[in-house]
Length: 292
Length: 137
View 1 (cartoon, rainbow over the protein chains, first blue to last red):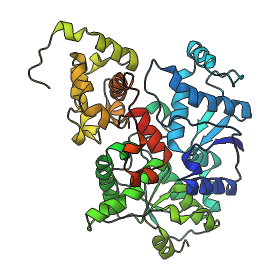
View 2 (view 1 turned 45 degrees about the horizontal axis):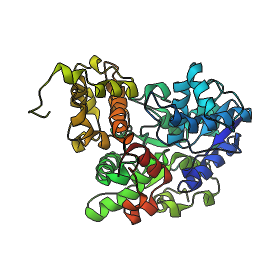
View 3 (view 1 turned 90 degrees about the vertical axis):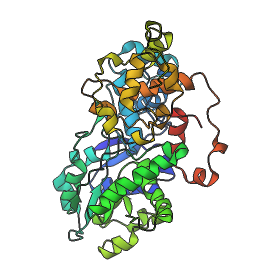
View 4 (view 1 turned 90 degrees about the horizontal axis):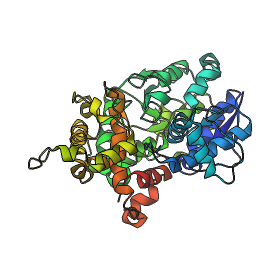
């Protein structure tokens, strides 16, 4: 299986552990990805305006590069990139007039793009495509007995047109983790927004969200929380410490990218993780469960 | 809703309402005020006007009041309201339209130095870029 890969900005900086672990897991499962030779910022938040095509240029330029790469599938690990690229395709496909206007603003791109030549894929869907049986066979630490709370956030589930699973009751992360031998912890806040970029202007909203999301996962008995979005990760990992400074009774929980957990369960080299990037140190729990 | 503002046909057919429709492409008149959006919104307690009332106010042409309110700037575009709406009203797009009415007339709406330095150094890029595309500092 061969596919193109779009990392986006944060996977090369704050979320290096996500990129390294995801690529290691895929390699272990026999999938090689080609990083696009040249890529641009996707714009992070999809422009929800109907009348402003300028904001589609950034994602479309990357999609043109993906088409030129010759691979049908484009893997976007960052969920914000996934959301933006996928919604951009939904917005422009089958609309020749919009595409013509966008092409008029792109000087460097000579390849015509119509919107239906590239499939943007997230890593959960990709793992399911590879096969849960194959994943199961690749796990070496089968008796870790971990209780995992899977947090989906918004970007993989909403709006419905780009959802990878049911927006109300998704199960794809739980299916993957069950195949990997983990016990799933269902908690009511698993699809709720973490506050997103409001961390910049309105950190109180993010604190409130983190308190509720983490509190709910802890109350339901989780050892670890796993997710995919680098922004959710920052909000839920970093902000836990701020909350604990204000409220000593607040119980923290380590947060991992789901691919980090899979890499540990597969027994891949632990040096891909860079645990210094974590605010709540997951190593004590991982050691206790025999994963380190 | 502001009590001393009278409902009038002039207000309902104002240019602002048309502009918001052009930006968002949403038919707000499909809304019958069930309140699902407001009950699902994870940030509603931080808002001064809950989402279902925002839609009602757009129907009645209270755009001035809405662009001055806190609500569009509290919304983080998580799209939960839109997914929950039984009438197919894309509330998240209306919020974006209200933000755009302000952002398109104010180009000086972001200064990195206004963000607390300790926080700024820790923030991932996606938080900063997302913020600058959606809000004013």
